[in-house]
Image (cartoon, one colour):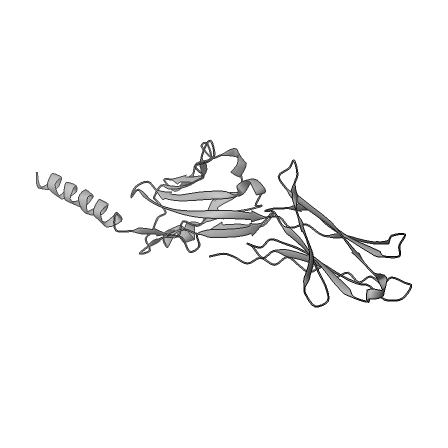
Amino acid sequence: MQLVQLSVLFLVLTHFCWGQYTMVTRSQVVMAPVGSDITLPCHVEPAADLREQVVEWARLDLTPPYVHIRRDGLDLLINQNPLYLGRTALSECWLQKGDLSLSLSRVKLSDEGTYRCFLPRTNTEAQVTLRVVSVAPLSISVEKDPSGSVVLRCESVGWSPEPELQWLDSEGTVVLRAEAQRGSDDLFSVSSRLTVQQTQGNTFTCRVQHQPSGASREARLHISGESSLHRFVFLWPMILKKKV
C-alpha cells in the first residue's frame, strides 16, 4: 500500500514541476533569403533536458500541419508535411539544454508563415513568424531618343515581398518612383524609364528595395555632358536587417 502511495506522489510532483516551464522565442519574426539555411528559435526557461519529450513544430495553415515531430527520441516522418521532407532537424545537444529550435534548410517562398513550437506534455507553446525574401539582380540599359535626350531603363524580375523602385540624382534626392507588378509565380517585377538631358552631366542611381527588410539592389550610372555616353554600373550586395 505504501508503494502505491509513493508512486502516485511521484507522478503528481513530476507533472507539477513540468508545469513551471515557460516557452520562449528569441525573435518573433525571422527574415531569410530564398535558398538560405536558418534556425527558428524556441526554448524553455528554466533550461531542462527535453530529449525524451514529444516536440512538435507545425504550421496550422497547412494540411497536414506538422513541420517536424519528435517522439521517444526519434523523428517521426510519417505525419510530416511533404513540403518539408528532408529539410528540418532538431539538435540532440540543444534539446538536452532545453532548446527546441528548428533548423530549416534551403528556404523556399512557400515556407513563409507562422510556426508553432509545442510541448504536448505541458501544453506549452510559442510562435515565430518566418518572412522569406527574394532579391533579384538589376538589368540596366541606356539609349538616346531622337530629341537627343538620354533614356535610362532599369528593371528587375523575381522579388518577394513587393519592392519599390526609385531613381535618385547625385544629391540622393528621389526623382522618380515605380511600383512593382505581381507575376503568375507570385514574384514581383518592376521596371522604370528615366529621361534626362545629356548636357546634365549628372549621376543617377536606380535602387530597388524592400522597405520592411532593408534588402536592396542598386545600380549607378554617370551621364557625361559630351557627345559620348559613359556608363558606370555598381551592384551592391543584398542587405538583410532582421526585425525583432
